[in-house]
Image 1 (cartoon, rainbow, N blue to C red):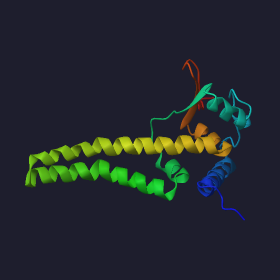
Image 2: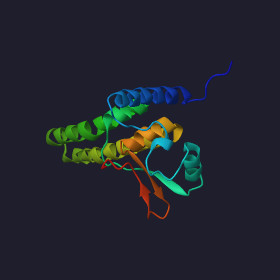
Image 3: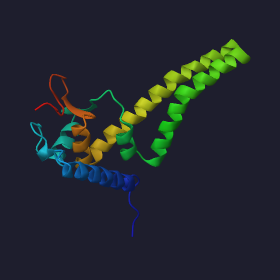
Length: 169
């Protein structure tokens, strides 16, 4: 008996969680796709064709939304990624606050610690994007969910055409 490859367990778990959410929302009347074939006006008929096109650099998978959805991140991220996100959030807000206090008490040089805001936000953004994009590439169900929630889009390499979920009828 061989052990599953690293990440396979979290992939299956996150895929199962997403599938539960999708099925629950479908039971409430939302038409959330579970497969690429259910996405209207999508240029690919199968998930494998999409993955192959991305691998060949014929299209790009990109983050679409500028919003960070903590619920979606928590659904897809591993426990260590969630802990890292919490650390970066703390770095972004607690380090600058502590630096200002230390600047008043000890030395104005502590104001350099306010740069922790930018470091924490930047690292947190990169982590969020990595989790979303890698999750979309691991599973058709997860990709369809992220596409529906407008977290990802597919764009041509010349950036002339972009495909994203259009919520308007």
